[in-house]
Image (cartoon, rainbow, N blue to C red):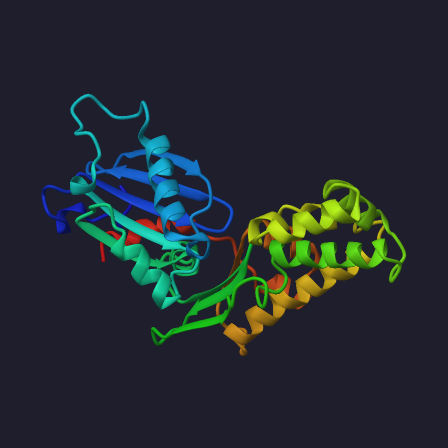
Length: 300
């Protein structure tokens, strides 16, 4: 049993602790039985609060259902809102209005703690010890727990005005470059041709796509930037700027470079080879993931 899972401190009617990591792309849930046995993990669609509270709760429930389906032992009770301690780490939970809306829509969990996805990722990465974390996936944010217990945050302002270096930001840059290539303000490149074809191959189709696209849709284009970077100078420049954004977040969190630094998120992982040698030397493997951090919330 993980030492952080102190079920003895929970009421006797709580049979399950569930840690949920929810962002702009997906939702992951890990379910632990009171005995300390990990029941399972499940995945569903996005539950970032910027995409709406109803969608968040729908995908949280779906991820939990996938985690327990066919995995319960015969003498275990069926998980329900009354016998679950739920720790939620959701993108956008640092927005007070979205946080309040999510808590108000609680479908009946008697023990519920909601924090940002960045905080639970930080708690998981360093097992609650002082450290820094930069997350770059669909969005981008940095968080640190200082030695004196103070929390520091950088970035995380949200798409489209923030989240520099994120998947959504890279996708937005790729679309903007493609628009300029289509109307003659920039020469076509392998990246712009790929994006243009993906968005329909006509100005009308691309305009319609842009009118409907949100954060996640733009983030789905980020892999194209990586795919073309070797032979496309514009794509390579986008990734160089993204790497600089990651380093900027890390430096703002810890200007003295004394805290261990973990990185998380698909974009951050792919940017590691593009970071400066000094920054690479600071990076340490995460000791746990965001679901570990969310589970820890259950026992606070």
